[in-house]
Image 1: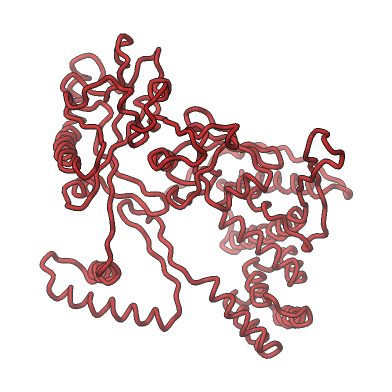
Image 2: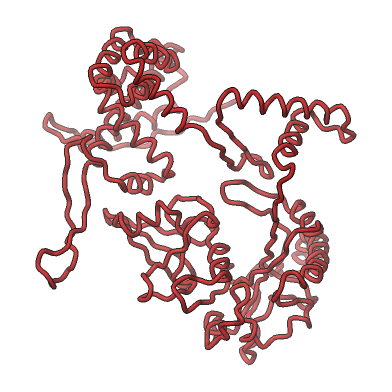
Length: 548
C-alpha cells in the first residue's frame, strides 16, 4: 500500500484573547483542528509509533471535551420555551403573540427542541432524542463526571453508563455513586465495568429503587424492529425480549432448522435453514395479503396539464385509484390496458398483461447495453431523454409507449420498502405469478415521476385519494423521518376548509410530527408537484421531496 502526501492546505488562524466567548474559542479550536488535519497525511513518515499513539490519544481528548461542551449547550438550549399566547387586547392583531421564556437548565425541556437539533445536524428523531437525553441525564445527575469528560480524559460513554444507572435515584444516592466512581480511576475502566460497578452500588444503597429502575429500563428496551441490510435484497429483523422467552424461541428455531437441514435438497446452509424455520414458525396460521402496484407513465399535452385534465368537473362518484376514468378520452383496451374498476374481476386479465410486459422488459433489459452500443456505432447516440409529449390536438392522457408498443419508461427494477429494505426485481416478477397477490396500477407523470393528482370535496380524503397520497409520499414528509406512510396521518398542509382536500394540499405525517406542525411552531408549504418546504421555529428551512 502506498500513500501519496499532499501539500497542506493553508489555514488562517484567528487569535483569541482571554475574554473570548465560547463561540470564538470553538471557532479557534476548529481552525486548529483543520490545520492539524491538513498536515496529518504528510508528516507521519518521521514519527515513531509512540508519537502516532500520542496523536490518537490527543484527538480522543478533543472529542471528549467537545462532547461535554455540546452537552451543556443542549441542556441550556432545551430550557428555552417557545409559546404562542392569546393577544391580551381582545380583537387586536395578531391574535397570538409569540413569547420566548428562558428557564433554568434542567428545570424545563422544550418538547420540540430535539426536532430543531435533528434537522440542523441531519440526525434522525431517535438519535436526536437519545443525544439530548444523554446530555440532560449526565449534566443533571453526574455533573462532576461531565467535568472530567470536559477535561478530555474521560470517555463520554462512561459518564452516560453511570448516569443511566442513577435514573430516578435520590440525589444523595446519585452523589454517593458518582463519588465512588470518581475515586476509582474511571479512565482505566471500560464502560461495561463502570456500569456494573454503579449497579452494585445502587443495589446496596437503594435496593427498592434499583429494582424499580431495572424494570423501567427493561420495559423501555423490549421490542421488534426491521431495518434494511447493507446487502440489497436482505433485511435485518431485531427482537429484544425477556431472556427466558428468547431461549424458548431459539430452541424452537434451532430444532426445526436442523430438521430442515437434514432433508434439504437445495444445498441450503444451516443459517439459511434457521431463517426458513423462523419464517415458518411465525407465519404458520397467519394470512398475509400482498399487493403489487405497477406505475404506468403517462404524458399529456403541454397546453393541458394533467391536473386540469383530471380535476375539471369530474364525476366524483367515478374516481378510481386516484384517477377519473370518465375524463379521459382514450381507449385503454386498444393498447392492451384495462382501467381498474374492480380488482376481483380484473386480476386475471391484469396479471396476464403484466406477466407479458415483464417478460418483454426482461428481454429488453438483457439486450439494452448491446442496443445502445450498436446505435452509438451507427451514428446517432441512443435517446435517453424523457419521451415526447403527445400531440396537442388530442386531449387524452395516454401511457408513454414507443412505436413498437413497449413502454419507454419501463424496466424491471428493484423495489425499496421504507425501513425494510430492497426487494430484487426477480422476486417482484415471481409475485405477479402467484395466486392471491393483488395487482393494481398507479398513473405517474412521465416527466416528474409523481402520481397524477385528484381531489375530494370533503374534509376526510376518500380511500382512493388517501391511497394515492400514501403511494406518492411513501413515508412521513417531515425532514429526516422515515416512518412509513401506511402508519402515518394524512394532514392538510393548509387547514381545511381554507385548503382543499387535494393531493397538492395533503401530506403524510407521523403522529409526532403532525403534532409538531400544529403545536411545535413548525410551518410547511407544498408545491403542486408535492415538494414540501419546512420552516423551523428558529427560521431554518428544509425541503423534502415525494418518496425521498
